[in-house]
Length: 464
Picture 1 (cartoon, rainbow, N blue to C red):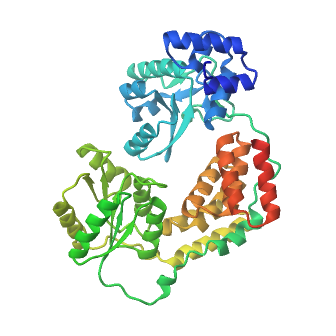
Picture 2 (spheres, helix red, strand yellow):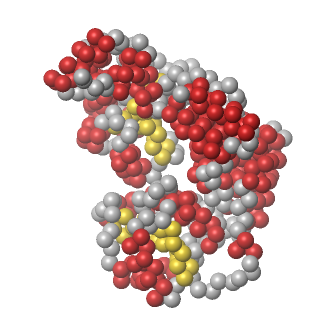
Picture 3 (cartoon, rainbow, N blue to C red):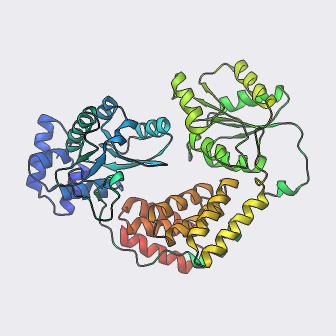
């Protein structure tokens, strides 16, 4: 008996196709190749809207209807034409901190990492029907090559919405249909309580102990490399602190304020490039030299890109020679610390945070956002500040920015119930079933009492 393709199963469950249509498409696929979703459309056996909703439901990601999408051709500059065609990706929009990327296979993490690495921007993937995507890729890059007379690619059914900024184009997004959550996002009731729950002061900070020997933080998920570097650096007279995961590395930076960080690019939990960006964008920690190491990204161009995009002070490929790396550590430390902002102290960050919370509670959301972003510049590793900023962005109806900040909160403190619950509600409201289920499951484990646990369990049952 032939095993059903997952997308075919979803379409059958939604009654978007019948079993006969599925059999025809699978037969065509076995003979001619291609993806099932593309074959169903090309054979006229399914409506494109149904296929897009099924793809979104299957993958837990938004799907993009390229026939209704308007793409600024300038966005194509971040991905060369041959790379776009080969990997099946297309930039839909490029913003200051993110790229909206249509992908034939949005589970291709290596491609997403490559785009994020080269551009220095966060990648937000959208799934697209492969046959249509590859056709649109050809059309877009052909238009781009003709010069500046064409600024946009217009899908054949595309119309600018009245409230859409033309410079940004327009992305026609489909999300899977999920039941509306029975509960709403909570912000006011938990704003005060999380400050207590996330007290990030470390007892070691108040010990009065003065450290005179430079502390080097070594971050790598390969124990052999950690031991090698630790042994060599201790022999040179340094104190060494180690970490093997991204979250552990962020906590170590905040706790020890090291004189220098040796940082692997590929880490569990949080990408090493993102850790470097957080360090270098902080007033409190930006003076700390960062040496990045990687076995994945090779060549002098990558080294220069790492320095330019993420602020790294140097870059070594694995396997590296130990003597030049230790020599570079000494050179960077002998150069002395860079400029440290006079306001980069815990008191200044705390004052900005409390001011932001007060402004939020008073209903002054723009001023609250400004204060909290100022606090993040001073202390980018504070779950408190990210959580407060998420609530402010939600109050301003900027849902996706709120989701981003809630995600930052649980990245720093994975077991906080309030942001997990809020993320679950928001993902469910936006139709991202898989992400909603994941957050409800995590919230269930962290529920503070039995009544709340039952409430969370009901939401899970409703989704599943």
